[in-house]
Image (cartoon, rainbow, N blue to C red; front, side):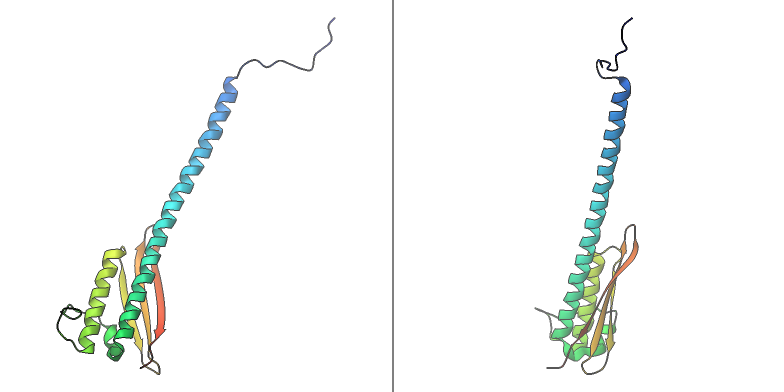
Length: 152
């Protein structure tokens, strides 16, 4: 009688091994695709937030340049020929034009975008600038900045 051998010879690559390898590779590819999709979504969100910060800073600069207007920035704004190359305007007319132009930019750069400026009188006066937009997959996102603008 021959002694039993504990070693066995493997010959070739079996069907079961091939299927297991295919499943492992498939799961890995699905994971990579999911990470790629999340990266794209995060990039879009970061772009919208960056645009909101830029737009809020733009309005803060406009307010600093036209300090006299005060509560004039709490309007919905109206189009006028104020600004460079336009007619000379009063501070109230300039603030209405600034708000109109700013809101137009928000609507162009942010999906479902809207903005508002709130004025709180005091020493120094305080402005709160709010921007909101529709963030796909999340809902409504907002960015708020508050500035104090002392008289010169």
